[in-house]
Amino acid sequence: MSPGVLDNTPMQDAAITAVFAALPQPVLLIDGNGIVHTANQAATELFGARVIGAQIRAYLRQPEVALMLEQVLAGAPEGSATFIHSSGNRDAIWRVVVRTAQGDMRVLSLSDVSDVEAAEAQRRDFVANVSHELRSPLTVLAGFIETLQGPAGEDPAVRAEFLDIMAEQAARMSGLVADLLSLSRVESVEKIRPRQPVSIDMVLKATLAALRPQIDAAQVKLDYFVPDDLPEVPGDYDQLVQVFHNLVENGLKYGASGGRLEISAQQMPGLPGFDGPVLRVSIRDFGEGIDPICIPRLTERFYRVDKARSRDSGGTGLGLAIVKHILSRHRGRLVIRSRIGEGARFEALLPCV
Image 1 (spheres, one colour):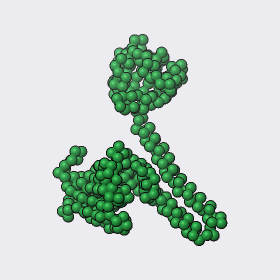
Image 2: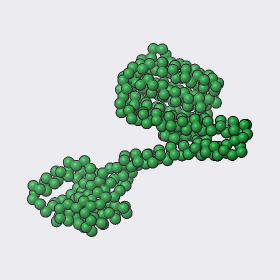
Image 3: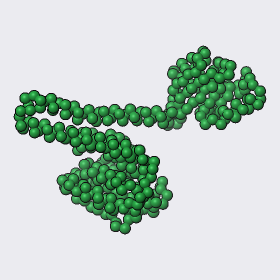
């Protein structure tokens, strides 16, 4: 049998070729020796046109796939394995499935499961991070409880000190759980854009009123440059309060050493990636700043530039991830600018229409 044809009538061959061509995923027809007889366009784009008539083993050399191929070509009715294909700077993960077809022919199909694998890896990392974040305060609480159950519990000074630490660790766990629930709620509605008109000036003033005790305690001078006549934006009021609460609180925790926090807002006629006018709200601190190499990872869950300092200040590592998801729901985005020694600027960009 020559490559490119089956032992069928010309009409059947044409029908098979048409079906193969219409399939969006790469599909190849191979014989019992592993020679490729037919490949659709998606397959030739993946492996090249020379794959037709070639030995499929030459294209799927990775051990797991090679073993599966040998088993199917030796008589197994079907098999599947994972194949990693490198293209430029990207590694795509393909699920290869081979099933016996007519006679000694086999149909080999590939499905790109890169996104599925990435989501599964993210889920595993997320569970591991949550477990790690909860394990530390739980260990501290268990240790102090055990200590207080012994003779140390009779010492009022020691008992008071330990109870303060236990309350701090319990608050840390409570904050983590609250942020996890908040992140889950945001993600559940991320594809639904809010449309209620919201005044950013009102959002910012409500945020600052709630954070006034922290601002005073940090002894930070607040400069507020927000015009009264800013246009309203379509949004969710409570979520936008959460955005700026997290950003201002972030500036107080990590930029208070600069002694000043600047909040400004302005309407832009347009920015790349937006259709129409954009509201840019900037939260700037004058603290130590952030190494630019860390900036792309700041919105990752549980990522911290300085882990010890973040935990000491009560940070959960989820604040900026929540900000990113809320702004994404509003079809906006977060821009972070910083240099070591020059403070940091967090800009929330929100479309006005």
